[in-house]
Image (tube, rainbow, N blue to C red; front, side, top):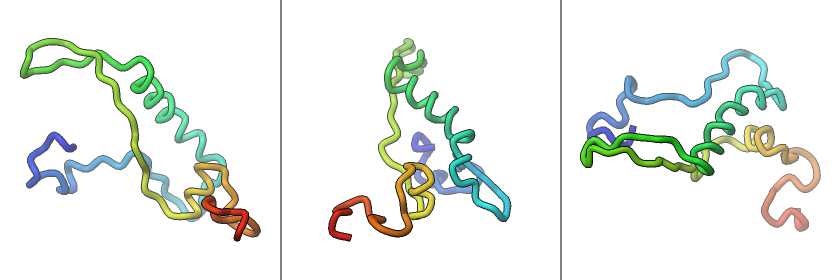
Length: 98
């Protein structure tokens, strides 16, 4: 969506949630089922790339991409990274002192 004009970037119809899980219960470690296709696609984009078309130059090129960061709350961080977010050593930075 970053190739849109600034006026349209934050409009609801132009946003695309990458993962939407509804329901009263959290998935816990079963979230891997939902993340596996995303991880596979991102790995392909990083290592091999995909063939894309540049309409300005009117030629094809090998497109490579990465996901530089994600934004999530601390419990979700624990589920995605398999890091303990309860009990002892709950903070990933400087955990020996917590």
